[in-house]
Structure formats: structure tokens, C-alpha cells
Amino acid sequence: MTKSLTEGSPFRLIAGFSIPVFFGYLFQQFYNVVDTVIVGQFLGKEALAAVGATGSVNFLVIGFCMGVCSGFSIPVAQKFGARQFEIMRRYVVSAGFLAAAFAAVMAAATALLCRPLLVLMRTPENIIGGAAAYIRIIFIGIPVIYLYNITAGIIRALGDSRTPLCFLVCASVLNIALDLFFIIVLHLGVAGAALATVISQGISGLLCLLFMFRKFSILRMTPNDRKIRPELFPALCGQGVPMGLQYSITAIGSVILQASVNTLGSDAVAAVAAATKISMFFATPFDALGTTMATWGGQNTGAGKFGRLAQGLGVSCAVGAVYSLCAFGTMALFGSALGRLFLSAKETGILEMTRQFLVANTAFYFPLALVNIVRFLIQGMGFSRFAVLAGVFEMAARTAVGVVFVPLFGYGAVCFASPAAWIMADCFLIPAFFHCLRTLVRGGIPGARAG
Image 1 (cartoon, rainbow, N blue to C red):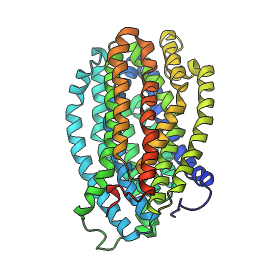
Image 2 (cartoon, rainbow, N blue to C red):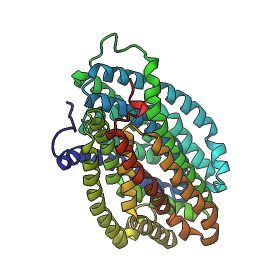
Image 3 (cartoon, helix red, strand yellow):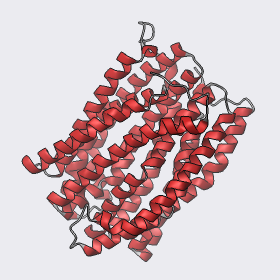
Image 4 (cartoon, rainbow, N blue to C red):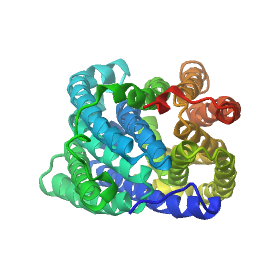
């Protein structure tokens, strides 16, 4: 069931690994988009704006969860690449204990603080009630988010990118069915959409957990393997916490930007909500390449095959460049039509704002491709702390746009906030990759690889 990425053609291995990951992210975004479509079409533009107003704070918290889980899986990939299977199993167990602890603390804290944060972000009065109801349920469900992401991350670290896809497909179908049932039949409003997301992700996480221990013989645990080993916690946290902080620091800029968007009114919030969902859907190939590079970097670093790191980078960048051109052409031609998935055709002003946002973002998709590819490759190599610094650059760019340029230029400045963030991050990440590669070649070992 496992697969090594340390031998063979980089293009074939990267394509074979990333395609299932891509479809997994695609289905994840698909049910996120359908969730938003159902909210917009059945509950109206204010409900759509309420869900959209939670996007940045959602990314702030859930992004940290996903980053931590991705970081916890990197030592697993490195020990698998080094064929140190006993130590690898101990990392798996320790990662599970840490994930459970992180999940419990975060769920309690964020559920209590979600409404004050929305108030701080100057969320419009006509949508703050729905926004708080939606995001509180999402935050209460943080333990199932950890469950899915830690199990899926470990499975991918062992070279299997197909199994998480299968369970995500199941979760996607279930989420859509529950959306319709909770919103149309039970009339639960935006809270129903949140419940559907939490329940479907919880089921996919349980399926991953059962599959992981039943089907991977390499994970058959002895009583000695199951012991809590605090000495491994620093290595796991050394990878997971910086990756989580990278997401959260990036999201701080998004929160500040969202606060600026909120001052432009609920129409602008609705336009950004719809455009962001579409953009995230079209950006899934970059997410897939990033996840692939994390495993690629982890296994090849663990195996000491540093020359393959740059080869993987080149292959991924070529794929990202071709796709970026295709995505821009699609948005230029069909941006307004895509916006009508979320909004009534009579909302011509919001639809035009949605199209403007989409065209501006996709014009800079190649810098976004580089952000995902290079950052995750560096993390897989064991230098997760560099991701935090990249996040600082993104935060600074979005903050500058939100604080300085949105008040001056209005909605047009909002459309270029993310491209500015991506370019700033790339200016740091590209030199950082070559620095990390030289460090490995000269015999330097990141502290997180100890153990």
C-alpha cells in the first residue's frame, strides 16, 4: 500500500501522486462551492454574505489546524524515506496524541471567541448573527478536522494519495445531501450548512483512521510502539507549529483585508465571497502540487537524495505555468457566468464585481503556483520555520492593501490584495529554497529531523 518517491522519473512520480491529490482537493472545493451555491440560491445574498464574512477567520483557525497536521506528517515521510519504520510508527502515535490535545484546546477557545472576533472585524449588523452561527459550529467541529487531516497526511506520507481521495468523494456527496436536507427540509439556515460540513468531514476522518490501521501492514503497532514518547514532541511541534503559524499569519492579513471589505457594504462582501470560492476551486491544482512537494521533499530528504529536490521543483513549476495560462483564459471568458452560480442574474452589480476579482487574481496565478510549490517543498525538506517568514510577507502585503489602498481606491484595490501577497512571498521563498538545499548538501540537518 506504500509507495516510495525516491526512485524513478520525477515527472511520472509527481503526476501519479498529485493527480489523486488534485481530485481530492477538487471534490473538497466542489462541496464547498455547492455549499455556497445552496446558501446563496435558497437563503439569499445576506446569508451568502454572512458565510463569506467568516472566510478569513475560518482560514485563520482551520488553516492552522491543517498546517499543524501537515507538519506532523513530515517526520513520518522522512523516516519512511530513510526506511526507519520503527521510529516512523512512534512518530505516528505521538502525532495522534498531539493532534488530539491541539484539537481539544482550539475547539474550546475558538467557539467562545468567534463572535467577538467578528465584531472586531466590523462585520455588518445585518449579517453578523448568521456569520456567528455558522462559524461557531465549524469551530466546535475542529476535532473532526484534525482527525481527517492527520490521518490523510500520514497516509500520503507513506506514498498513498488515492485513499484520501476516495473518502473525500464520499464526504463530498454526503455534504451536498446534508446541505439540502438541513437547509431546505429542516430550515436550519446557515447553521445547517455548517453542520453538513462538520458531519461529512467527521465521517471521512473516521474512514481514513480505520483504513490506515487495517490496510497498512507497516503501521501494525506493538505495545512498545503505542507508548507516549514526549521526546518526539519537539520534533513534531518543530514541524507542525511553524506550518500552522504560516497559515495563521497569512490569514491575519486576510482578516484585516476582510475588515476593510466589510466597510464597503454587504454587496462587496457577497462579491468577494463568491469570487473567493470560485478562485479556490480553480486553484486546487496548486494545492495538489504543494501537498505532493511536501511528501516529495520529506521522502527524498530522508533518503539523502538531495538532487531530486530541485528536479521535483522544476517539474512542478512547469506544470503550474501551463495551468496558470489556462485558468486566466477561462476566467477572462466566463468569469461573469461563473458568478451566476451563486447569485441571481438580476444582481448585475455584484456579478461584475465578482468577475473583476476573478480576472485580477488569475492573472497572477503563476506566483500563487510558486508559493505552494516552493513553500511545501521547503517544509518537506525540514525547514518549516521558513514558511512562517513567507507568511509574514503575505500578511504584510494584504495588511498594506487593506489599511492603505482599500480606503483610497475602494473595491479595485481588494482585487489585487492576494496577487501582491503571492509576489511578496515568492521574493522570499525562491532564495530560501536554494539556501535550504545548499544547507542539506553541505551536511546540515534541520533540527526537526532529529529522533
